[in-house]
Picture 1 (cartoon, rainbow, N blue to C red):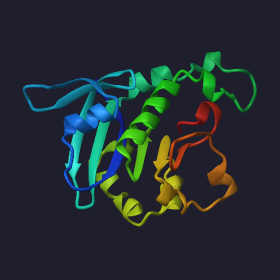
Picture 2: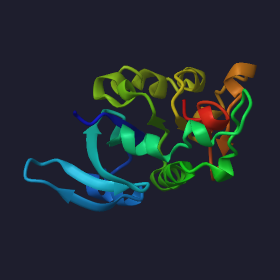
Picture 3: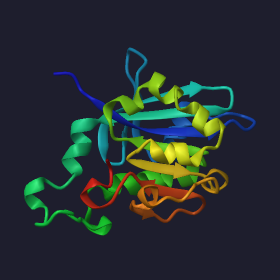
Picture 4: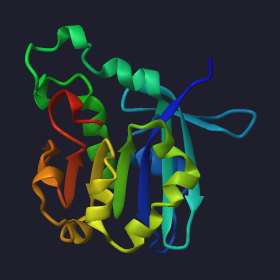
Length: 194
C-alpha cells in the first residue's frame, strides 16, 4: 500500500535574496534534513518522520511544501472510543494530542513570515497543481475564499487577515494566537482539523 500524504504549504513572499530549501526548512522547525540518492529532500517536522520537502520558485512567492504521512497525522487524533459522550465530541485544544503540529506550524509561520500558509488535511489539498489552482486567492489577498477552502489550519498575514469577511459559519472555528495575522482551524473540537 502506498503512502498517502497531507502537507504544510507556505506562500513566502520573494524579497531580495531567496533562501534555499534547507534554510527555509530550518526556519520552519524541520530537523534531520537529508537528501537521498534520487534527490528527494527528507526531514522530520512537528514530530512527524520521513516528511518530503519541496521548494517551487513562483513569480511572487517561494512555495514551500512539506508533505507528511496521513496515517502519522491521523494517529495523533484522539480515537473515537476516547471521545466524551454527546453530539459535539468536544476536545479542548489544550488537551488535543495533535496540538504539537499546530504549534510547530505557528512557529514556522512566525519565522518564515508567509503571506498565507495552510495545513492540508485532505489528501488532494497538498498536490502541487491543486495548490497552484488556489494561488490566485493568495495573489488577490482573498481571505474569505481562503477561509472557505476548509484547510485544516490556515494562517493569514496581517494584511490579508484584514480582508476576512465575518459570517457565523466561517467564524465558528478554533484559533490560536499568533504574533501577527490570523491562525484558524477548519472547525471546532474534535473536528477542528476537518
